[in-house]
Image (cartoon, rainbow, N blue to C red; front, side):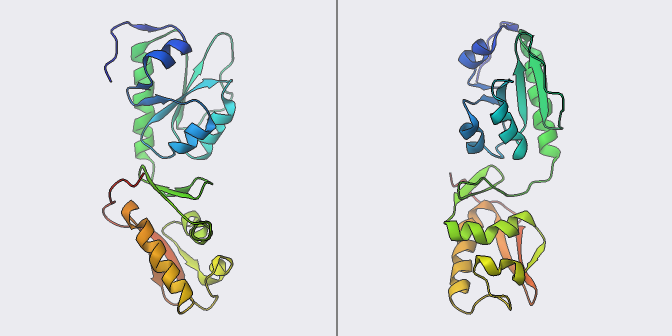
Amino acid sequence: MAIRTREQIESFQTLNREIAVFGSGRRLEDEADVRALLQEPVVVVLRWPAEADAVEAAREHGQPRLLVVEGDDDPPAHWERLEEWIRLPADRRDVQARIAGLRRRAAELPVRPSLDGYDRLIFRHHWVALTPSDYKLIEPLVEHFDEVVPYERLVGAGVDGDGPAPVATRVRLTRLRRRIAPLGLEIRTVRPHGLALTATRVAGPDRN
């Protein structure tokens, strides 16, 4: 999106009105918007402290964020690697530099799948919807991504403690494998120990 030549951004309202997507940053309205963009390669732009709940949601899910501190409000006392703040008015170039730095740091972090609490599996900027039972099954696999999860830990999700059930669970796993394949993920059976969720070499097309 083209950026106007004016040097100063005077207020949060101006930032919100002029640039819904500012370079690689995006203005969000509430926590639901933050969750809808989990793991996308964008920096969420949030007002501090008015949108503290949305900031906390972004922190929880590793979303890079630029906090806009207006007036005499104090910035957060504690900072994380994927967080920057700026006080308005600010030079447009300063805002762009902070957003670019956040994107760079986010790109350096390992890529892992995540679950958003709304029956969605998210990986590499894409997502697929899951049934509640499949969500329950894949949850420990996501938690221990790229590790073997023993069958015993998957009993509550419908997998037999001595290995996958011969018919029903095999069909269920086959369907789940097909469902997540476009994300570039696969569930591998590591006999006789358990299952492992891993990344395939090439992620598939966007499914959202």
